[in-house]
Amino acid sequence: MRAILANPRYTGRQVWNRQRTDHDLIDAANTTLGHRDVTRWNTPADWVVSAQPTHPALVSEADFIAVQHLRTTRETAPGRIYLLAGLLCCGVCGRRTESHWARRPAYRCRHGHTSATRPMPGRTPNAYLREDQVLPHLSALLLRLTHHDPDGAEPMALRASAAPLSSADAVAYLRSEAISLTYDPAARYLTADTPRAERVTIG
Image (tube, rainbow, N blue to C red; front, side, top):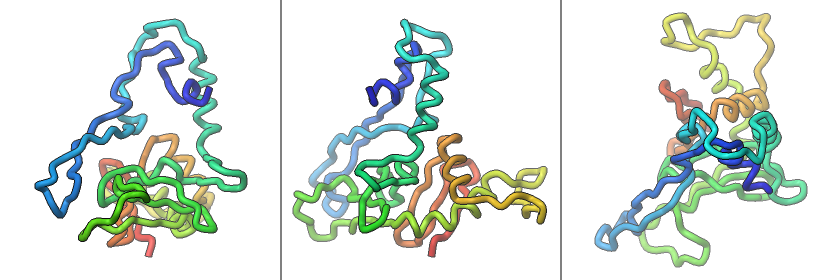
């Protein structure tokens, strides 16, 4: 049932480009080992959906959209909710980070390796990011994403009378616009996947 409610094909439309195959080096430090094919999910913004229905629908479009809003927070275990699940990408390898519980919600990227894989010399360290290190900075990012001067050059300062922006507002906006954030573990900043590539430093 979960797969049906996450797949727009069940609304009666054809969908292409949901996945892609990347050719990754097996070991960046030893290129003689060659490449391996890695299948990854594209973001919904990259999907190609037919303009007209192509087959009978199992789910109405209204129901499908409503379910996507309900799925904006993910609870993978009782009491463990990851607000940023699916929104963060690794700046080292480009993969989407995985949710990781470290006494609190966190995210990590092992760059395609598994815990059973023996670390090779020179292997890129895993990237880790705690959710509570990100959330306080998202309101500033939302400001950059949504408030620009008329020529679109720079963000405008919020008027004093404007309602304050919250991290929850930012998360909701990122999901509604299918904007992902790329995390650079060395520089400690997040870059939005937008034409302006808005960025915030998380310290």
